[in-house]
Image 1: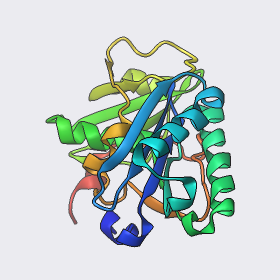
Image 2: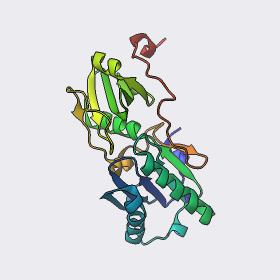
Image 3: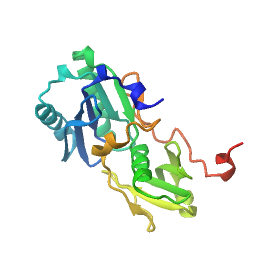
Length: 227
């Protein structure tokens, strides 16, 4: 199911908020999928979320009551930032029931989709970000197919033979491996790829990603071959 079938013209304008990283991002999308306004502010989500949202709504000449849906980052990322965004959306959608439609995207899935768009990737690629000491949130890309976000441990990372990318987080529990390429997180580029199947998903309320539910499955060529 693509984005066009998920979000129709009646569900715009849509407020996008992302508190997963070291800065707070907010933007308003119009019904052609382009920004009316957007802003990214460095600082703690507790201090920056509401001023950033207020700023983009002012630039878009809209109020919370004009919104018709919310697009949010489910994580992985800053637990406090993600939870503050979740609480804000849950509050606004109750105050303004016309806006009570929610759509989620995943931090690493967005990075993987943009990386695939920008780069001629090798057959095997792995994107990692900090979770806790000895473990990483991870997405692997095999022959252009983007896998689900899961968990990779240090031995898995050490044995990895493909390209390796690292997305820094607000709080790092460990140094990244020496052989990684650092990625910049770019939520402002969401409109470039939001039509890609599977990147956005409708949710019943705000549902945040829970690291550690899935375990890392090593890539096996036979799994990706056509029957």
